Length: 225
Image 1 (cartoon, helix red, strand yellow):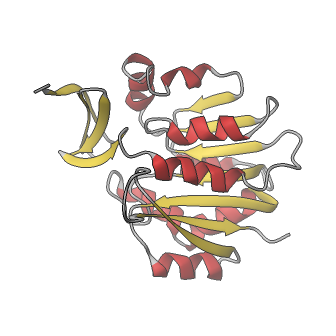
Image 2 (cartoon, one colour):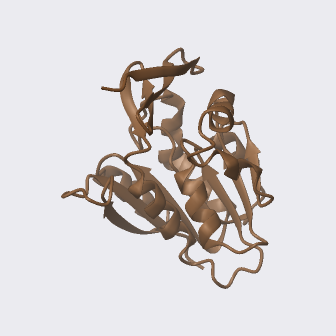
């Protein structure tokens, strides 16, 4: 039986231990030994990207922001969905996650970090949103933490509250779309999105194609023209 290897560790700004592991051909991220994500369950991250890009056909030079690099599955799907002139900015809070993608995860999606369409920003995505000009993005994907209930960083929760949603609304273009990944359904978050002025849809997703149940949720929120 092949061992479960601990490849690298890093500390989050709040002191939690983020660790990268491998087993056989798969990789896993854990926070304080609790599972966060794995390359064996990436289907919903791809759906997150597909839904975000579904309205970009008419955009000549679409500008997309991805909050959270993870294992790069959302980034890969975005690049597959958009044309050669797209500008894709990836905000990742932890420099170690970027470094791990380049060092350990080239066989997964690490090589995509050097795609000419991609800009990697080692920064809190909330800060990037707060500093962006109005109407800057055609689409925003947020796969930050564990969804509306934070697991890695308590401050991530502000993205899902009224002020964060107002900021997202401001930086989206008219008819722009934001998609949120979540480990669970959250009806209170759906109500907050509606209250913030978004047209909202929730989409259940499988963690992997052969799964029997749709255990993850994508919140799709459109800015009205």
